[in-house]
Length: 263
Image (cartoon, rainbow, N blue to C red):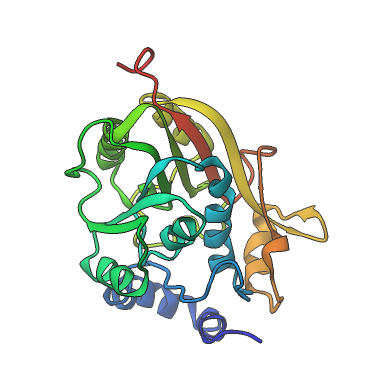
């Protein structure tokens, strides 16, 4: 069964391109400002929508790396992923600059190992060396080039020595929606992503997120057709891998704070 959100997206794609552009630029700004709202339990969800599946997959991917760590979900949106990690025993703070999103998260998700904070991620009130891990999924592309660097410096400041940053952003050279999102101020290529991260962190691993169907990697020119098709997707169609790190629709990296190389 297709959700109401999926049916709405299908109808939206049928609209003339000029109407789609107008709605993205002027109508959607009054909604969640691109923040995904998920009410279902991520361990037992039945999503078939590519956007929801891709977001959920990132939180499931990062979970094994976080055992025993005190974490910040930097740009947590409505908190569904932060809550998922807390349910699996991670002590975590979710941070977002939307008062509405944080209010929703606080009302919807509660646990002893879970907090939500409203703040500007460029200048937080957290003390130096506060967190073992910072998560940043689909945040940095919403910032100007100058603010992207401020954001990374702040993430580095609040990480403890040898703390790790888990960061993801759309791949400008392989994402079919590149250039169409009015909320994205600066999308990055693989080389831009890598170069900027290396100015502040030691990169430990590169990963990529991609669509697959019947075990076949979906290239850029087929992704939009694949996303638009009336196909019942599942988690099996979302791949996160260390292979083909330049080719997936999402760039992911695991970075480490190293005072000896980045004083």
